[in-house]
Length: 430
Ligand code: HEM
Image (cartoon, rainbow, N blue to C red; front, side, top):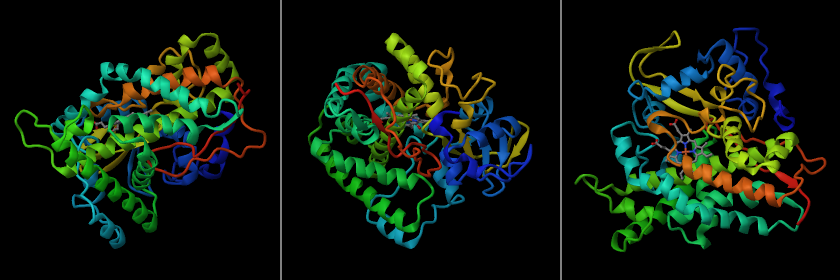
């Protein structure tokens, strides 16, 4: 286990013996922060596990996670329905009141199934193809250089807020046509969505999160209406003016849901992988030296970082017909958690799975971007952002290290997304 990964997992260690996983709770903040021991036991002892505290079915081995991803007719992404037992999800009155001021949440890409999911996805796909991302590469490179310029002389940086967050946030904001002066708002909205997604928020926190979401909706409602009148070459114009095969246009709630997914999916995950990737390099100087020696190794190192980071640690599925998986009966209506963070450290696929090995031969077989019909729309963009980030960070931050006496890294509880709150670093100034 890496130096900064050890942390709090001890406090959540099971009191249980082999085969008995009752001492673990997947929502325990200590387990969310450091899920590795729990994940290892799930993969080895119960790759399909009905969790006693929550009734959730956890799927953890690489093989069975892949099976779930490739069978969307049995394992649905319409998990909003699941949350409400087939009805609209129940929310506290105070939250409902704020929600009523905005547009309703509707199922689009991530929370829809084919064929609707495919239809929504095809509307924005064009902006995220290999070719579209290649066109963006010079902009990403310039942005990385600009962000580093601001702290290169200081010899110290809080990498998350000064680099890892602003880089993907600015890229997606520019893609959505958000002017620079509104970037700070954009970040706040993203945080609001992440808090709401986390599944751990108090009523008060949910109210705050929804206030931000409604603000986001009002902002983009204006932009969408403007682009309906004055279309430009951006994703927002493409959405509001889309007619697929002569079908009806998207309504405002659908456009907003898609924009929301682009905002959230593209920011938190990439920022977390950049931070965790840097943390892995600082903790493993031999691997850092390999990349410095030959920067051609960076693309494979990025895959290895994605494998070990797995910022989308878990994702929901709902089983929509009686089935069996890995010898376990799963009745229709079961809520499931696909544990990407466990599958990516399954020793059957990745030997010595907790080791950070930038030359790992099959690093790119990881499931950090999911698989099947919901395979990450932004995978190419995220890869380009990470590649450009590490090329620049390795060149311009010599001898990166943790400041003396820095406290252990913190990972706030969130059932879906795992990422550190901050990464203070020192390096030899330019
Ligand atoms: C390191 C960065 C990223 C990681 C690890 C990641 C991970 C994932 C995963 C695991 C899924 C599948 C969810 C499921 O199982 O249902 C997914 C879907 C998605 N991602 Fe990403 N993502 C990243 C970056 C991005 C970026 C940059 C964007 C776009 C700006 C993006 C947009 C999406 C969208 C729209 C979906 C839903 C696709 C669909 O359901 O058809 N992601 N992502």
